[in-house]
Length: 315
Image (cartoon, rainbow, N blue to C red; front, top):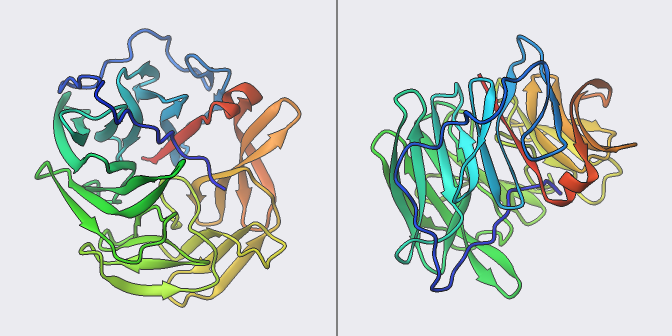
């Protein structure tokens, strides 16, 4: 199953005040060389000029770090930060409620301005933020506590231009659903039973694909062209990673690897997978035939156990 940012939220009377200011400038750390150990971790990220994706933020142990230029800075009071395609904006999810509402901080990284936008009311939470490819909207998954875990109730769409949020309840939604955008920025896709569903922005069901497995892969489950859709293969398959043709719904490839997590498409023929290594784990570039192409990050076992998540953004 894919690794996701922590979802625990303080739902009691004690809350952390959220400052509606620009995210903290990450000036406390040295500039990044080609290989860098991320602050407060033993994770080494390996970058090269011309890479189509870069690590723009990361989270672990309910801590969030944002990149600005070649440095990362800790963002106090936030548990999740996601940067828009192109890098102009960021959306941060706070660690706790404020005045009975969940919220997000929407930041313009160019103008260095930010605004707080309320999302759902207690006891719901809204997290797992995913930007549309045009950078105009963000979808978050709305959930509520169910026993010792959480179950999905619908989604929240944050309009990054109007700086507003709209909550949509989805009847019959899969309890484990996590919403992401389709490549045309028009619909949403999420797991549904042993397959997946496409939804309109009003929550209506537009299409259902059965026996595909759940959507997988970081910030965007679709390949750059929008044609390929990555999933965790159905349980009946011996392979773990499947690629489907988005238009026809037909199986395009089965990849014979067993990753711990998938962090998104790199290009039309390769993607990022986290696999075990002798020293812990590695984020590696793998093609759709299962061939390893390059190491993108080394992750210690200790950091992995703290549920570290590297958020890659397409430039």
